[in-house]
Image 1 (cartoon, each protein chain N blue to C red):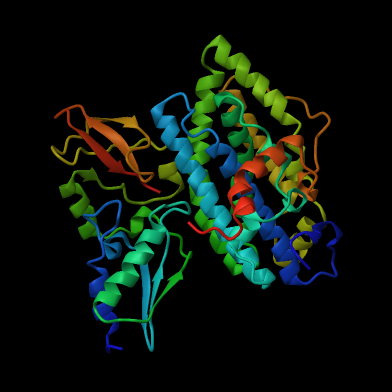
Image 2 (cartoon, rainbow over the protein chains, first blue to last red):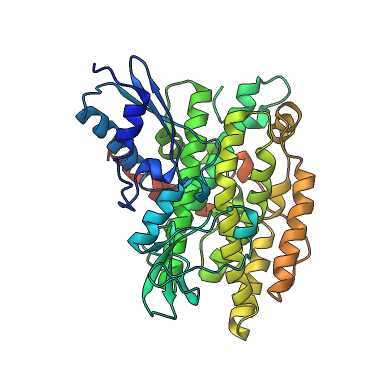
Length: 161
Length: 264
């Protein structure tokens, strides 16, 4: 057993990429809720969506990333509360998303945004807000497909939940 | 005590027994609805909806897993979520009859989802404040998803109802055909009553009022007529299912029945 600190583990987890949006790490996404360092290392993770197919893959990557650094005994604890929303995505991560070509979610998730809310999504390439939704569902459950009417480029929008 | 004895359950049952029966039912509804939706994968009328349906189905199955995993812990008998899904016989499933009705066409599928989700959303909202923390947490997670499902599916009902003559008449027929299964959503039994009294569970009468208001709104916008309440079918909650259910289970459970213990 290698002696590790909580900060070290958090830093390592900051290098574990989300399998569906590899530009973001799991700490960027805000799904790492706690790290407990004792005889074992316990990482508390929260799922984004109940049916997110990446949940198991993420848990696997966490165990693997810590093992590679000499932490043999890793436990994963799933926590549900408070439920994840896109507001858990860190400000730096929102910029990373934009630079990657994905429009970040609107801030202030909640009933208003979900219920018939009109929204203006800025094109991550040219910044124009003259955009239209092509499909509410994109390459993954959490993204919608958009098109920019200004620069004519298609882009993805990380849906607000 | 297993998750199956809900008919005889009363005030004498322990808190965990009531919870077990209640949580198992929630899992059954989520799983069977998810399974019905999966049957339509690769059969939806357009790509966007194809993806929406598959993703929504995944949400239900994810929720079923959370409910079953909790039920298995409450039971404490060494069973896991897969045992609940794949190794229980028909009469041990306590989902509503509405859920197990055949998917039919796109309109039928949308009507079923709107009728159920309008109820399920209110139920989850109420469960967020029940006395059991774990169940309240699952409900809080699931509620966000179902709110989105209901919004999306209601918009489709609007398009179909207020669409062409053909789409309007077909979707009106779906509403009429499925209406007889909506009474069961609000038929409280001993499990519901005990859960309400001892764990600050929802009052089904309050749910019924909220549901009628919501469904009436959606139907009106969709230019559809809300049917009169007539004879209502029930039985699913007590493990008495319609003929369709056996076929659904046979397909869903085939692998574990044919190759017991098979692992992915």
